[in-house]
Image 1 (cartoon, rainbow over the protein chains, first blue to last red):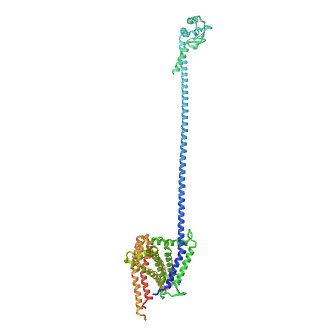
Image 2: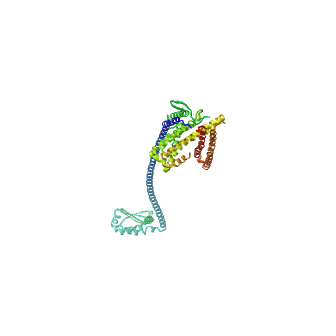
Image 3: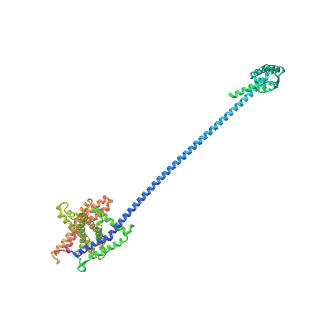
Length: 244
Length: 233
Length: 82
């Protein structure tokens, strides 16, 4: 067993030199580059983190903006809805008012129509009554169409105010319209009666008017005294029209 | 057959006899240095193929040191990595025809083991102080002091003989087989030699790590493994 | 045979050292490999770690045989008594 101490020493020195060489040229640069890579990766990660945070912030901002837009849209919609509601309400009110007006008009029209209808009916009834009365009168003797009415006319004349009565038949003869031509006797009787009422003699100007049906009518400036069926029928017809 | 235990000097540098393992070691040193300089000349953040391999090696080394010692691997990386790379290169240099691996000579292994021993003592004193390091010999009690001292010697000798025996026996067996059989028969044995060389380099480096870790005071988690390794030889 | 008695005994001693030195590690390696196979069969996902540890362990066990081989070589080539 022989150990070569020179070789042992040389190998030990060689190994130490190799340690130095490799530490200097291999391990230190590799460790440095690994550390650099780690730092770079950390930087990249930090960058990515920052970018992610920025993206997150941007997203939140966009979300907020979206929310704001939504709110604004909601507000606009609500406003529009409200305006539309108001408009519709106004339109409805207007329409209601129009309808009311129309209805009132229609009602007025209806009323008018009804009124005119009544008037027509009343007119027709009056005509009918006049017709009936005429026919009835046709059956009666002629005397009945005038004779009975002289007293009535005198009474009606008596009911007139004094001032009116005083002016009658002064300037001109009293104009009498009769349903038929009066006979002489009848004319005299009528003159007497009127003179009795007026307390002075009068002259008569008798005219025939078959439309009176029966009776007499005294016409004077300022007064008309009707005492005949036409007037009665007309009063009845107007009464009917008022009530009907 | 040559005597594997005796070295004949190739030439002399003044009074110093230079033997074949020394020359082979110089060649290995030159090769490793050249490779290191070339490989690390332009390192980039975006690594090339060689740089990726280097970084993988460095990261694995760091991981092993951290797992074994439970410490930051930076102060030990150069020593452990150099020992591993040198032993590996020396073991595998037997592939080159005419070259006998330097680790097949007892002196080279002894030099490596003594470097490890010196590093163990040096790191222990640096991390614990001289008193603190000497006190570790009295653990767990003062009765253990002689045993601990003997252990320091025996484990260094075991380190030497393990590496020397494995590499030398490989060379020896290949020489015997070559002298007996012809051309292709030694190839499987050489492949086995490669495997043995790699495993022995790993074992040498990891045992160095364990010794240094035990000397500097490892974290509790690494302690059981360190004891286990120390008992095995 | 002109060798001295010491040389004859040295050669016999070397053979005995290697043969018996190889016995124990062979048995140990067999047990280790069997245990590793069993473990891999139980936990195929841990095959990588197991086989790596197995190789290191086998190298450690083999070292015992190597010690015997070194002693044999010492006896043969560096015998202090020759």
